[in-house]
Length: 390
Image (tube, rainbow, N blue to C red; front, side, top):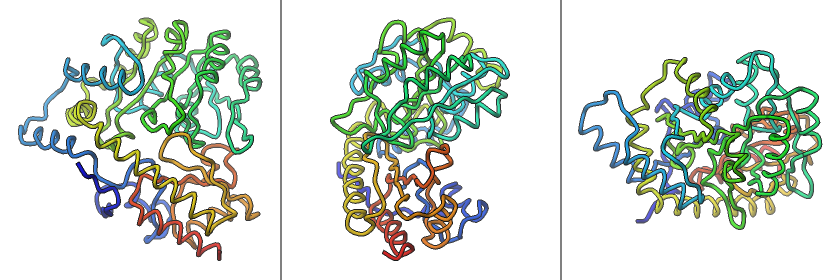
């Protein structure tokens, strides 16, 4: 099939936080939003067809994970990620952030330490602090245009703070790293040595650009598999975030029981019937659409790279290894973080994610979502160019 990812769909007045909350969040009414990590085009036609069939059925009662969903997910994970699992290891949740909260409450007590590697997806920090746990951060650092893990600092912070849980972002949002197997093995060795449980947020696992390769954390070793929760969802891959469905793989029965017990305490039980329907259709028949989307994203990355070189040479692109989120360095302009954000939002009228939302290491960075039609992407870059007088 021919999929048109450059057709612009107006998302205003569709209960879309990307567009409909601009004024409420202090942004200009005519701001162009490329911040939150959902896509600006419809999901795969095969998913729409499955949802339409469910609507025609007309009954939206309590639902359950069945063998057909398991078979579809099992084939997808084997084909796409060389990962195999037993059905008993699966625990569904309405989202990965929900799963992070379950893990925090299941594996730590109040005031115990949870570590993250900043700059990183900001709900990690929020969920740790809102659940009364002690936040510990280990900074990533940039070397030769590539963000790296400071393994020495990571282990030191774990030792000093008696850390109980590590929330890993893999692939990493916002620095667009796809961690190598060797890097993940070092992380695993440190966590096993200090009895730190790992929650691996792998929601961006289907967006990895060659020659990089995503490694499912639990495939590192038998010991790693017994010490982790691996969480993923079709929400990023197929633009289904609003349908609220995710899957967690927990091999260790003791960890799985603790996690499931915390999930049960929330009152959440059966998965969303529409989320489940969409996920099954995605895993069964969504590959053709996803392959076309990946090509579109690579073309958008090429477009941004060329545009910056020709029109905004002071803006430095951190070359992405994965995700559809680009990390842009504006530090050459010599502006403060607040001045930079004000200029982009109020003069350019473009809403991106301010780098310091992800941690102090993001100062003078902005995160832009390129899962959008190219006309919108060009409009955003043109606005930024004009605002900076380039």
